[in-house]
Amino acid sequence: MALQRAELAIGGMNDKKDVQIIRQVLDGIAEIDAQDIKPGLVRLEYDPKRLDLNRVFIAIAQAGEGYDVSFK
Image (cartoon, rainbow, N blue to C red):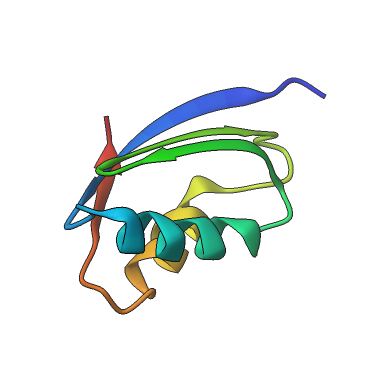
């Protein structure tokens, strides 16, 4: 399994509450092997054969907090 890394910029993610929300969202995606979450930034390790990053973008956008997700 060859893991890939991705860095995502998360607009609207400014404080600990936002970090907790994003962590809960990402914890719900079993195909993410590692994550590092800081205000405004998410780093992921994942297997691209098991996970399409669009799923991550959609899950974060649907968190209901108005987050804007893009590649860093």
